Length: 548
Image 1 (spheres, rainbow, N blue to C red):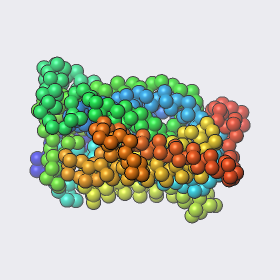
Image 2 (cartoon, rainbow, N blue to C red; image 1 turned 90 degrees about the horizontal axis):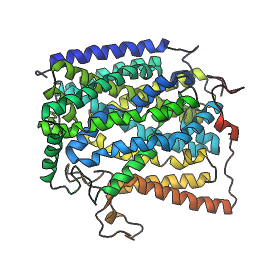
Image 3 (tube, rainbow, N blue to C red; image 1 turned 180 degrees about the vertical axis):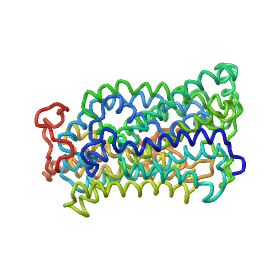
């Protein structure tokens, strides 16, 4: 703690203070009549326009972990890290129409969460509860991963002590986040997202122009990367993909694209928008972030050319690869600009963490608390419960960092995509058809999630020495279906999430056929065809903050 980088720390604190003030001011920004309603506290009044929605969803999806981990992955493994680029490009046209339908039915029926929609579509408390629990479980480690990015910045600025003292700045930052999110709800991250995105764009554009000039050009940078990977033993590392990881790259990109808007925090950003036209404009404009992400990813190769070395985590004694990008800025830029970059990454952690905690709190309140604990809860009681739940979720995420090896929380990110993908049949497909039976959806969820976790458990990580949950890439040789190995001897890898999703869909279809043959009741659909097409100016549209 004696080698604090004071110029960087001062710039970081000034910008952090700015967003803290904005967080508290946000409670009065475009405020409705009350914050004691989930429409207002949890969805910002459902009235965000094109610009606010663009910054909010962008700030929600492009997180601090993305800005730290994607270039770190290119630094460590090469081309495989570029999967993040095509998946964001694929995602927007892929989810364009489903998101419009989800917004409309949610606006028409007052739904706040994806589990609300499932409850209304199938009349099944069990299925809705499974979707809610899945969303909460997948979101918790995602919030913890924002801390990984924030801690990488704090560690680079000198906060690298072991034990509680080393985590104290992180805890202070999240106490402040918890307080202004409790007070302002979704308006806080929506307003702060403007500052976050402005800083990120400035930092990355300066970096991709300045660093190549300083390091001898992109030719030198790519040559340095090729030389590094030529000397590694890993068969999947390199500046180009090979026959072993091409399928993994494609399935990981597709699986991540399918999962992106199934996450509760992504749905929250969508439902907070004013209307369908807002979403159409955003789905067209959001790929601009993919350009930013592609430029950002190349910083991993720039770090190789610059000879950047990861900072050793004093708590574990191991190098922290997540510090590669912060250390690159610390080494190559003036202190004042490095401070701006660190603030951009730090604020980039707070915005998605706030949205994620609100989304998880909404799921708890609407789909567990109100469903099972207090059916007659008033709007004010729902809002109060959500505020308290958002605090629990935030500090639950902090507990991951305080009491669990941070590397383990990173491994949980690999599980998160596999988990949330299992909600696709119940949420995305159900937006178009009720053909799949609710018991088929339950059975598919159980099989998909169970098999996915079993496959993940059996994947080792030779680099870290972990025997289980060592990654999401499964060698086809290890694919065992009741003793049958259809790809025995193959070293080609595939993303576990796609394998689990295929199993989920197959089981859902088989059980559906059986249930329909037996004429098993499929629940009551409380939605109407017209609900999936309503827009903001429609006559007799349900008022915002209306009764259930």
